[in-house]
Image (tube, rainbow, N blue to C red; front, side, top):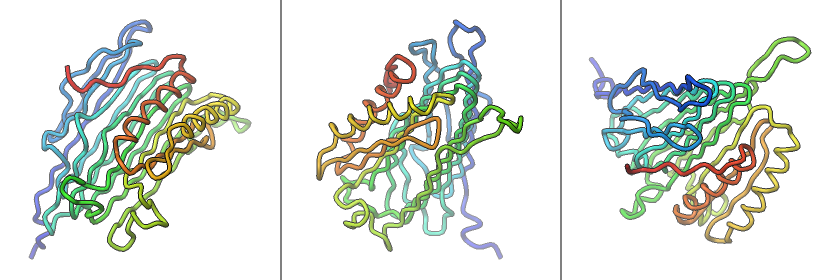
Length: 301
């Protein structure tokens, strides 16, 4: 006899996007290779520096219990892509016997390409169970800017840390040139593994987040940049972090990765402080690495 969990309907959404730049001085173009509801992309919009902006839609309005979502994005050599969502990722309250929702995202940036992955916050509703796995692969001279913001829940409805659990995993790897062995390989430069379970381990505890209910991670990467340049960028971003930090309201910090990048972390009592600060770190890092600040993705056209 089938269990209730096995008979619960699941939605398996998938999205596969490819960005190419056929002409060296021409615009980046979007190719939608796969698109299965509830994930959808309408079209790409031109942005500065011959880039293309695409909005990731979830036509369900949010992630439902049991959803199995897959996103694959390839930025071909020399292309410049910017991805954002149309609003916060809402993790809806699941049915009691629904399996956990899961999203697996794979981002690959070819040689000399650039991907800016600027997502809106994740907002988990009561009893939500969600697993998110993100893998980023960067080839020679490839760049990546990406952030993640996690809210404690629907604060307007009094749902602070009422979700069941969140699992958030991020892996960033860089393809390095062949060394003395003559063999090129992938080097992990950032590994994030987090599991938040509010019931047994309340995040608002003084030994965890304390008064800072929201948190964010930001990564700025470009393969091949010398280590001393990353130390200089770390110092620049650390100064910015000090200027933006306010005890009891928001705290920021910056640190270099093992190679090819720098990470910024922030915690805040109000989400808007993170959303206002992240673009400043992104633009500062972008100016340092690419000589221009770029532009925040527009939400409406």
